[in-house]
Amino acid sequence: MEEKAEKRLEILIAIFLGITALLTAWATWIGSLHGGNQATNYTKSNNVAAEGNSMYNEASQQLMQDMITWNTIMEYRFDAEMAEEKGDKDEADLILDKIDTLIADNCSENFYEAIQWADKQKDASPFEKEGYIDSYYEEANNLLAESQELLKQGQNDNTSGDRYGLVTVIFSLVLFLLGIVGIFKRLPNRIVVFGISVVFLIGATIFMLTIPMPTGFSFSGYFIS
Image 1 (cartoon, rainbow, N blue to C red):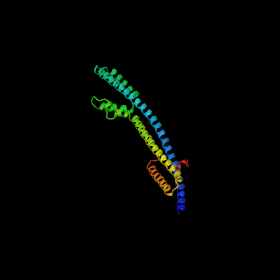
Image 2: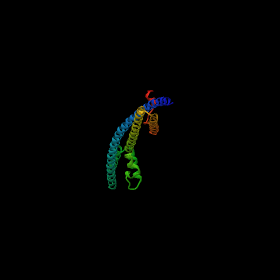
Image 3: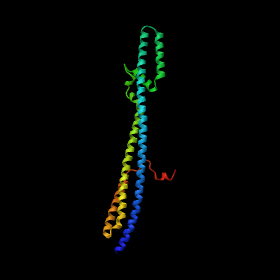
Protein backbone atom coordinates (compact mmCIF):
# COMPACT_ATOMS: atom_id res chain seq x y z
CA MET A 1 0.00 0.00 0.00
CA GLU A 2 2.79 2.37 0.95
CA GLU A 3 4.66 1.48 -2.23
CA LYS A 4 1.67 2.54 -4.36
CA ALA A 5 1.40 5.79 -2.41
CA GLU A 6 5.09 6.50 -3.04
CA LYS A 7 4.66 5.89 -6.78
CA ARG A 8 1.67 8.21 -6.89
CA LEU A 9 3.65 10.82 -4.99
CA GLU A 10 6.53 10.51 -7.45
CA ILE A 11 4.14 11.01 -10.37
CA LEU A 12 2.62 14.06 -8.69
CA ILE A 13 6.09 15.46 -7.98
CA ALA A 14 7.07 15.03 -11.64
CA ILE A 15 3.86 16.74 -12.77
CA PHE A 16 4.28 19.67 -10.39
CA LEU A 17 7.95 20.00 -11.30
CA GLY A 18 6.90 20.44 -14.94
CA ILE A 19 4.14 22.90 -14.08
CA THR A 20 6.42 24.94 -11.82
CA ALA A 21 9.16 25.02 -14.44
CA LEU A 22 6.72 26.36 -17.03
CA LEU A 23 5.32 28.97 -14.63
CA THR A 24 8.84 30.04 -13.68
CA ALA A 25 9.75 30.52 -17.33
CA TRP A 26 6.50 32.47 -17.90
CA ALA A 27 7.06 34.74 -14.89
CA THR A 28 10.65 35.40 -15.96
CA TRP A 29 9.58 36.30 -19.48
CA ILE A 30 6.73 38.60 -18.44
CA GLY A 31 8.98 40.23 -15.85
CA SER A 32 11.55 40.97 -18.56
CA LEU A 33 8.82 42.50 -20.76
CA HIS A 34 7.85 44.80 -17.90
CA GLY A 35 11.50 45.74 -17.57
CA GLY A 36 11.66 46.56 -21.28
CA ASN A 37 8.49 48.66 -21.05
CA GLN A 38 9.90 50.45 -18.03
CA ALA A 39 13.08 51.43 -19.89
CA THR A 40 11.09 52.48 -22.97
CA ASN A 41 8.63 54.60 -20.99
CA TYR A 42 11.40 56.27 -18.99
CA THR A 43 13.25 57.14 -22.21
CA LYS A 44 10.07 58.46 -23.86
CA SER A 45 9.23 60.44 -20.72
CA ASN A 46 12.64 62.12 -20.71
CA ASN A 47 12.43 62.93 -24.42
CA VAL A 48 8.91 64.33 -24.19
CA ALA A 49 9.83 66.31 -21.05
CA ALA A 50 12.84 67.81 -22.83
CA GLU A 51 10.63 68.81 -25.79
CA GLY A 52 7.99 70.21 -23.44
CA ASN A 53 10.54 72.29 -21.50
CA SER A 54 11.96 73.58 -24.76
CA MET A 55 8.50 74.59 -25.97
CA TYR A 56 7.80 76.19 -22.57
CA ASN A 57 10.89 78.37 -22.96
CA GLU A 58 9.88 79.25 -26.51
CA ALA A 59 6.41 80.20 -25.29
CA SER A 60 7.93 82.46 -22.63
CA GLN A 61 10.08 84.15 -25.25
CA GLN A 62 7.09 84.57 -27.57
CA LEU A 63 5.03 86.05 -24.73
CA MET A 64 7.79 88.53 -23.98
CA GLN A 65 8.09 89.43 -27.66
CA ASP A 66 4.32 89.97 -27.94
CA MET A 67 4.40 92.20 -24.85
CA ILE A 68 7.12 94.29 -26.48
CA THR A 69 5.07 94.44 -29.68
CA TRP A 70 2.00 95.53 -27.73
CA ASN A 71 3.98 98.31 -26.03
CA THR A 72 5.23 99.46 -29.43
CA ILE A 73 1.67 99.49 -30.78
CA MET A 74 0.53 101.58 -27.81
CA GLU A 75 3.40 104.04 -28.40
CA TYR A 76 2.47 104.35 -32.07
CA ARG A 77 -1.18 104.85 -31.18
CA PHE A 78 -0.22 107.61 -28.76
CA ASP A 79 1.89 109.27 -31.46
CA ALA A 80 -1.01 109.01 -33.92
CA GLU A 81 -3.37 110.65 -31.43
CA MET A 82 -0.88 113.48 -30.85
CA ALA A 83 -0.52 113.98 -34.61
CA GLU A 84 -4.31 114.15 -35.01
CA GLU A 85 -4.56 116.67 -32.18
CA LYS A 86 -1.98 118.80 -34.00
CA GLY A 87 -4.02 118.48 -37.19
CA ASP A 88 -1.26 116.60 -39.00
CA LYS A 89 -3.42 114.01 -40.72
CA ASP A 90 -0.67 112.80 -43.03
CA GLU A 91 1.58 112.05 -40.06
CA ALA A 92 -1.29 110.29 -38.26
CA ASP A 93 -2.07 108.17 -41.32
CA LEU A 94 1.62 107.28 -41.67
CA ILE A 95 1.78 106.12 -38.05
CA LEU A 96 -1.43 104.11 -38.44
CA ASP A 97 0.12 102.42 -41.48
CA LYS A 98 3.11 101.54 -39.29
CA ILE A 99 0.74 99.98 -36.77
CA ASP A 100 -0.95 97.89 -39.47
CA THR A 101 2.44 96.73 -40.78
CA LEU A 102 3.64 95.92 -37.27
CA ILE A 103 0.53 93.86 -36.59
CA ALA A 104 0.74 92.05 -39.93
CA ASP A 105 4.42 91.19 -39.48
CA ASN A 106 4.52 90.37 -35.77
CA CYS A 107 1.10 89.29 -34.55
CA SER A 108 -0.24 85.76 -34.65
CA GLU A 109 -3.94 85.15 -35.21
CA ASN A 110 -4.52 84.58 -31.50
CA PHE A 111 -2.59 87.70 -30.56
CA TYR A 112 -4.54 89.77 -33.09
CA GLU A 113 -7.84 88.45 -31.69
CA ALA A 114 -6.67 89.38 -28.20
CA ILE A 115 -5.79 92.88 -29.42
CA GLN A 116 -9.28 93.22 -30.93
CA TRP A 117 -10.75 92.09 -27.61
CA ALA A 118 -8.64 94.66 -25.74
CA ASP A 119 -9.75 97.42 -28.11
CA LYS A 120 -13.37 96.71 -27.20
CA GLN A 121 -12.58 97.11 -23.52
CA LYS A 122 -11.68 100.28 -21.65
CA ASP A 123 -7.95 100.67 -20.98
CA ALA A 124 -7.40 96.93 -21.31
CA SER A 125 -4.42 94.89 -22.42
CA PRO A 126 -4.71 91.79 -24.62
CA PHE A 127 -2.90 89.89 -21.88
CA GLU A 128 -5.79 90.55 -19.51
CA LYS A 129 -8.07 88.39 -21.64
CA GLU A 130 -9.06 85.32 -19.65
CA GLY A 131 -6.93 82.29 -20.49
CA TYR A 132 -4.90 84.14 -23.12
CA ILE A 133 -1.52 83.92 -21.39
CA ASP A 134 -2.19 80.24 -20.60
CA SER A 135 -2.71 79.62 -24.32
CA TYR A 136 0.98 80.32 -24.92
CA TYR A 137 1.90 77.35 -22.73
CA GLU A 138 -0.93 75.01 -23.71
CA GLU A 139 1.09 72.78 -26.05
CA ALA A 140 4.09 72.73 -23.71
CA ASN A 141 1.90 71.83 -20.75
CA ASN A 142 0.28 69.03 -22.75
CA LEU A 143 3.71 67.58 -23.50
CA LEU A 144 4.79 67.87 -19.88
CA ALA A 145 1.58 66.14 -18.78
CA GLU A 146 2.25 63.39 -21.33
CA SER A 147 5.76 63.05 -19.92
CA GLN A 148 4.38 62.58 -16.42
CA GLU A 149 1.95 59.95 -17.68
CA LEU A 150 4.77 58.03 -19.38
CA LEU A 151 6.83 58.28 -16.21
CA LYS A 152 3.91 56.91 -14.21
CA GLN A 153 3.55 54.00 -16.66
CA GLY A 154 7.27 53.32 -16.31
CA GLN A 155 6.94 53.28 -12.52
CA ASN A 156 4.01 50.88 -12.77
CA ASP A 157 6.04 48.61 -15.05
CA ASN A 158 8.89 48.75 -12.55
CA THR A 159 6.56 47.72 -9.73
CA SER A 160 5.01 44.92 -11.80
CA GLY A 161 8.46 43.72 -12.86
CA ASP A 162 9.57 43.57 -9.21
CA ARG A 163 6.47 41.56 -8.33
CA TYR A 164 7.15 39.09 -11.12
CA GLY A 165 10.68 38.84 -9.77
CA LEU A 166 9.25 37.89 -6.37
CA VAL A 167 7.00 35.28 -8.02
CA THR A 168 10.03 33.82 -9.77
CA VAL A 169 11.84 33.51 -6.43
CA ILE A 170 8.86 31.69 -4.89
CA PHE A 171 8.64 29.33 -7.87
CA SER A 172 12.37 28.64 -7.47
CA LEU A 173 11.70 27.77 -3.83
CA VAL A 174 8.94 25.40 -4.96
CA LEU A 175 11.35 23.71 -7.38
CA PHE A 176 13.84 23.33 -4.54
CA LEU A 177 11.26 21.78 -2.20
CA LEU A 178 10.03 19.40 -4.87
CA GLY A 179 13.63 18.45 -5.62
CA ILE A 180 14.43 17.50 -2.01
CA VAL A 181 11.30 15.46 -1.38
CA GLY A 182 13.19 12.28 -2.27
CA ILE A 183 15.77 12.95 0.44
CA PHE A 184 13.29 12.12 3.17
CA LYS A 185 12.96 8.39 3.83
CA ARG A 186 9.59 8.37 5.58
CA LEU A 187 6.51 8.85 3.41
CA PRO A 188 4.72 11.23 5.83
CA ASN A 189 7.70 13.58 5.73
CA ARG A 190 7.69 13.51 1.93
CA ILE A 191 3.99 14.29 1.85
CA VAL A 192 4.47 17.23 4.24
CA VAL A 193 7.27 18.75 2.13
CA PHE A 194 5.27 18.11 -1.03
CA GLY A 195 2.21 19.74 0.51
CA ILE A 196 4.20 22.82 1.53
CA SER A 197 5.56 23.16 -2.01
CA VAL A 198 2.05 22.90 -3.46
CA VAL A 199 0.80 25.62 -1.09
CA PHE A 200 3.64 27.92 -2.17
CA LEU A 201 2.95 27.11 -5.82
CA ILE A 202 -0.76 27.89 -5.57
CA GLY A 203 -0.14 31.07 -3.54
CA ALA A 204 2.48 32.35 -5.98
CA THR A 205 0.26 31.55 -8.97
CA ILE A 206 -2.70 33.43 -7.48
CA PHE A 207 -0.44 36.39 -6.69
CA MET A 208 0.94 36.33 -10.25
CA LEU A 209 -2.57 36.45 -11.70
CA THR A 210 -3.22 39.72 -9.82
CA ILE A 211 -0.25 41.45 -11.48
CA PRO A 212 -1.14 43.44 -14.65
CA MET A 213 0.25 42.23 -17.93
CA PRO A 214 2.64 44.53 -19.84
CA THR A 215 0.94 47.34 -21.74
CA GLY A 216 0.06 46.28 -25.28
CA PHE A 217 0.93 42.62 -24.60
CA SER A 218 -0.48 40.19 -27.14
CA PHE A 219 0.66 36.58 -27.13
CA SER A 220 -0.52 36.07 -30.70
CA GLY A 221 1.54 39.09 -31.78
CA TYR A 222 4.70 37.03 -31.41
CA PHE A 223 3.49 34.60 -34.04
CA ILE A 224 1.47 36.83 -36.36
CA SER A 225 3.31 39.76 -37.95
